[in-house]
Image 1 (tube, one colour):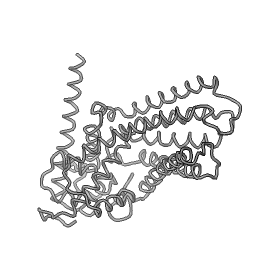
Image 2 (tube, one colour; image 1 turned 90 degrees about the vertical axis):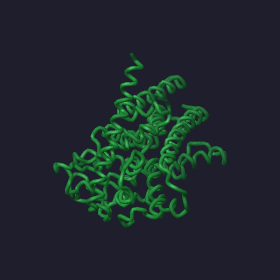
Image 3 (cartoon, helix red, strand yellow; image 1 turned 120 degrees about the vertical axis):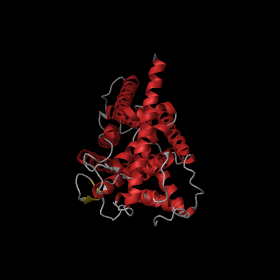
Image 4 (cartoon, helix red, strand yellow; image 1 turned 30 degrees about the vertical axis):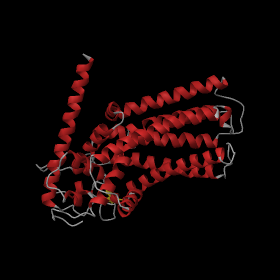
Amino acid sequence: MQSLDALTRQAVALANGAAATAEVSRQMQICNACRYCETFCAVFPAMTRRLEFGAGDAHYLANLCHNCGACLHACQYAPPHEFAVNVPRAMAQVRQETYTEYAWPRAFGALYRRNGVTVALATAAGLALFLVLALAMRGTLLHEPLAGNFYAVFPHSLMAWMFGAAFGWAVLALAIGGVRFWRGQSPGPVTPAAAGEATRHALALTYLDGGHGDGCNESDDRFTLLRRRFHHLTFYGFMLCFASTCVATLYHYALGLPAPYALTSLPVVLGTVGGLGLLAGPAGLLWLNMRRHPLQGDPRQRPMDRAFIVLLFATSLTGLALLALRDTGVMALLLAVHLGTVMALFLTLPYGKFAHAVYRVAALLKWAIERRQPNRLQLGAD
């Protein structure tokens, strides 16, 4: 009976994926006849190179879409029109199918459909694990000040192996998913010019400007650059925190300088600035997510979107609290909470909203390659 249920769920998932792909194809054919939004973002000039939209095309265009909302608010065929063209929602639905289809291991793709629960369970498990470990190693979570020495609570080797394995798994899973997606696109050879252009667009979030530089449409027809700026705070805050970890690793292994580090040291400065970005960015993104127009995006994916945002915020908040109180008697408790949160983040990276970064960069690279090739249809200007 269990195998029958599994087959039924698989059949339903395949049907949902086919329906989402078919809806993108229907809407793109209407958009191809209209062309009003041709200059809004890369999706529409890429669309003009096609007359039909198969599954590969739908996945490509869906991940090229940044969900800025400009086309929805500009479209004369948007609901309640009988054509019911809603490109952001259709693309969002296909993006989830991308994550599910290319996930590795493939069975873990189901975690995207219950991502809010997945993140909650992973966080609870991470917190329980490190709280129990801290109690086992020190016998208490409240102690005399330890001069900010985290290794007096958890040995460096234990943390290095645990988090190295978790992060390695996340990188491996995301890389395999990205390679699978790329192989299905047949984009052509990667040139330095195309790679440079894709990198520039990814780092600048070019297509969150609505095609005219004024930004996204969030709750109404007014344009705003807030979503782009909050994304930048989140992304570069994450990268600064990652850089802090890399520098601390270099200090420890190459220079023989173990933690704790002074507040003015490079690892701490990088981590503090990055942590502040990871507070402001996710807080702003969550605020915008809760205010977005009801037609914008896929409502079924809000738990996944918000769970990832909240987890990023919690990771930063616990890290900054740990830094501020590392010389007090609650350091072990805060360290356990922070490490449990970080472990949950690492384990869920390949099976949550973070995956969109991998597929979006791949789609941007494909577009950078494609736009340098002759347009055989000659139906639109790039």
